[in-house]
Amino acid sequence: MTKEQVIVTAAQMRDIEGRIFAAGMPVAALMEKVARLISDRLQAIIPQGQRVGILVGPGHNGGDALVVARELHFRGYQVWIYQPFSKLKELTSQHFQYAQSLGIPVYQEIEELPSCDFLVDGLFGFGLEREITDSIALAINHFNEWNQPIFSIDLPSGLHTDTGAVLGTAIRANHTFCLGLWKQGLLQEQALEYIGKAELIDFDIPLADIHDVLGNPPKINRITKTTALATLPLPRSPVTHKYKSGHLLLICGSRRYAGGAILTGLGARASGVGMLSIAVPESIKPLLVSHLPEALIIDCPETETGAISHLQLPGKTPLSSFTVIACGPGLTKDATPIVEQVINSEVPLILDADALNILAQLGTISTLQKRKTTTVLTPHTGEFHRLFPDIDFKDRVKAVQTAASQTGAVVLLKGARTAISNPQGVVWINPESTPALARGGSGDVLSGLMGGLLAQVANKQVNIEDVVATAAWWHSQAGILAAEERTELGVDAFTLTQYLMKVVIAI
Ligand SMILES: NC(=O)C1=CN([C@@H]2O[C@H](COP(=O)(O)OP(=O)(O)OC[C@H]3O[C@@H](n4cnc5c(N)ncnc54)[C@H](OP(=O)(O)O)[C@@H]3O)[C@@H](O)[C@H]2O)[C@@H](O)CC1
Ligand SMILES: Nc1ncnc2c1ncn2[C@@H]1O[C@H](COP(=O)(O)OP(=O)(O)O)[C@@H](O)[C@H]1O
Ligand SMILES: [K+]
Image (cartoon, rainbow, N blue to C red; front, side):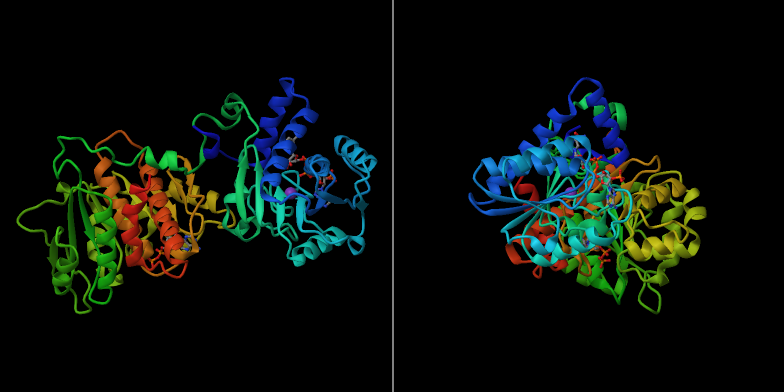
């Protein structure tokens, strides 16, 4: 486990810090250490001699900011302090007194503030629990309108540390220096527009304290490159053969949505899966063959509307000959019988898109309770609401944990910060992605990729949710790489499939 992987709530962070202080580390020494690390980062980013405004709050977030003010003052920046509070915590008050004694200008009214090139936000950190109101709220709105780059210490002031909700109002930072361990709120979608670029400032929290508070391994985790690569099926065994490298069955597409089947197939192709079979309505078989010559295309009888009516496997092939089935993209709701058929099988199963809508109609929880083997559900927000209308969605992490626990499935909730939970509540959150992926068809690519990965590792000792997390990471890294080369407008779902392999080559 690395610290990059760890996610904490405010209560857990306070508990971890409490252990460090109880073991003898002086609070003032820790503040000094943290704030110097922040100052070093600021010095590396902000050109020497520039004007920096430091926003100081009443607690230790403000204390950090005051140490930064002092450091930047001595390092040759033109610093001023905005500190509008009448009462400060003891340590913060001492730093404030010393900063004043150094002649650093201090202001209490926003009307009096001189201009500056950068702002450092040390108003509130993980101690903020209630709404910001009155003059402080007005000041925050005022600073947001300045259009100067803002660097937030720990988290943008005004965000709830756990849920990322805006408590009244919040600083819109360009850059956030998260202190020690990633706060859960920084991985919640509602916080994203406030955080800017986020980085972790590691101040040497002992792993033993993290384990004592969070457990080992912890329940809620950030996907990192290291964790993702740990389940990638590389290197391949030199003596593997195509069936040993997994046999994936995709069930997808309809006359109306033929493209969804192609995109799912191309996602699966990039996974390196040994054998790929794709069941589609018979009328679109020639199209699939032309795009995926290596795949075995299974033509199925179709309904009048062009959906698969039932699965017709060649010869007497049983469903159990497949390692994994991924079912859903482009099926339409007319494919209900085939979704029921695969749910009743004992093959590990990924359900996506229309298969999820059909599952919701069948009754999510009662239907899945019958399954004896792995199921993965990959809803976006709309599909999640249809599947789980009774689950409170305010906290996406809790929502996905509840969904997984109620169904016994691994649930991946798609979005800007995709969250994955297993039935025991072990969560992975994908911390890096790109809005370039917000395009029709990019989810189909994920289904195929995930199916191919699961098929390759199905017989190994791996946790399903770890593989699902690797698929989410790989998919979004391909989006990031494609957006870097082609802009955020240039990442259509087909193009995305072409970048999947580039992610692995770049490792
Ligand atoms: N311990 C350490 O040495 C280390 C600490 N670190 C740093 O400490 C930060 C946490 O410090 P913290 O616990 O002092 O809380 P913080 O976020 O500064 O704010 C709480 C203050 O705000 C006040 N307040 C709250 N809501 C308010 C409102 N709506 N409107 C107005 N006031 C309001 C509240 O007052 P009260 O509720 O008592 O009235 C209290 O005084 C953390 O994020 C990190 O930066 C790290 O560097 C690691 C080392
Ligand atoms: N704003 C965003 N930032 C990052 N990733 C996103 C964003 N919006 C969507 N995505 C990702 O794009 C994919 C969209 O999937 P989905 O909604 O199922 O699309 P479709 O069904 O059209 O294929 C998901 O993997 C999701 O996490
Ligand atoms: K802050």
